Image (cartoon, rainbow, N blue to C red; front, side, top):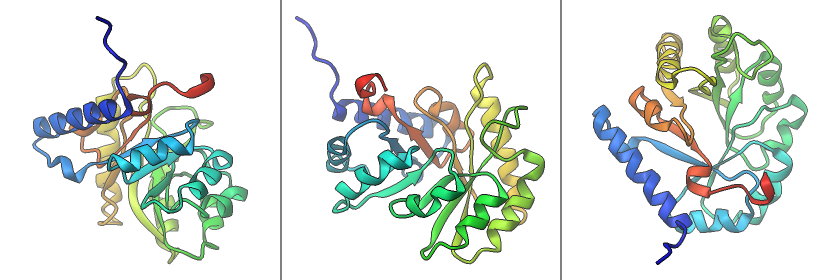
Length: 227
């Protein structure tokens, strides 16, 4: 007998179980860990299914796709996270649907956000590579950027976001983020959130203190149309 493929509900339940298991190992409360389901390339209908399954946080990295999708599901009680590289001239369009920006990485972007007419939650993206062209602020520039965010009344600095580089032990990479977070909290005690961990490495992220996970294919399945 051929077993049927896992459904969206099956995959979500599996990830929730894995999150709970990792939290137990880390001596943490799983309810304090937010799973942001990344729905890029998937239709609004999938977002509706996720909401029906109890998902409250969704993430997108392309404004041109996310805007219409968020508008189509505006009747749902969802928090939209923007997790992609954000251009300053796209800020207004992104803020039409997202209340959390997880990829703030430069002063010019903070300056553009000063015009926001609603509260915006901000994560500073930390670059864990030696490549300055990769997204993220260099560790040496983190405090200066944080101070800039703290000076803008409409911005609430939540903490840090990072992506583990390829070819590097993810847990060691996430430990670096945790250390940077402790440094950040010396000037912003409330900025203690850590967004790190994706489908392939979220267990390591939880063991290093992640408060937010960004999980796509492990929950949503393969992207449609080869996306």
